[in-house]
Length: 197
Image (cartoon, rainbow, N blue to C red; front, top):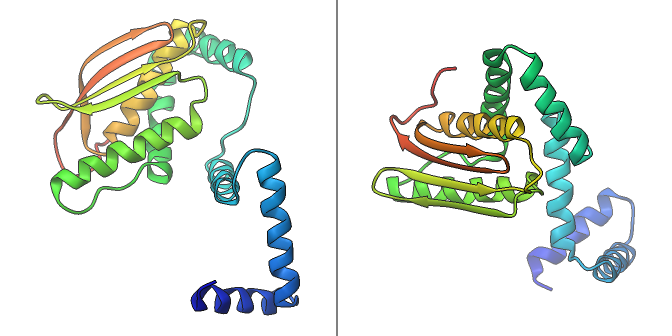
C-alpha cells in the first residue's frame, strides 16, 4: 500500500485503540463479506452515505403501492396549489443536498448538473426504468419512464418535484408532457441563481 494510506490507517487504528494488523484484518473481512453479497466496499460506503443523506433530509423508505396511493389521495383531497407547492418546495430543498451546485465554466456547469441529476434519479427513484437528460438548442430535455401502474396524480407530483429541482438551479419549464408513469419536460436556463418559490 502507499505510504499515505499506511499513515492514515495507522492514525485510524490509534484513534480506535486497535493495532494496525487488527484494523487491516477487520477491513479485509468486510471486503470479503461485501464481495459475497455482490458489492464492493466502495459501493457499501456510497450506499451508507446515501442513506445518511436521505435520513438527514427526512426521507423514508416506503412500500411503492402505498406511496402511489397516498400521493394520489393527497393530490385529490388537498387543494392542488397547496400540494404541488409542498412538493416543489421540498424538491428545491432536497436539490441543495443531492444535486451539485454549479461552478466553473458554463459548459462544465451544465455537464456537472446533468451528471448530478442523473445520479439523484438513479439513487432515489428505483421505479424509474428510463432516464434521459440531454442538452438541446432550446435547453435541457428531461425524459423519465416509470412503471406503468404509476397513477397520473403521482406522475404529476413527480413533475412538480423535478420542476422544483430545476428551478433551484435557475431553470424554468417551457414545455411538458405528463402521463401515467411517464414525463417529458423542456427546461430553459433563465439566470444564474435559484428561482423564488
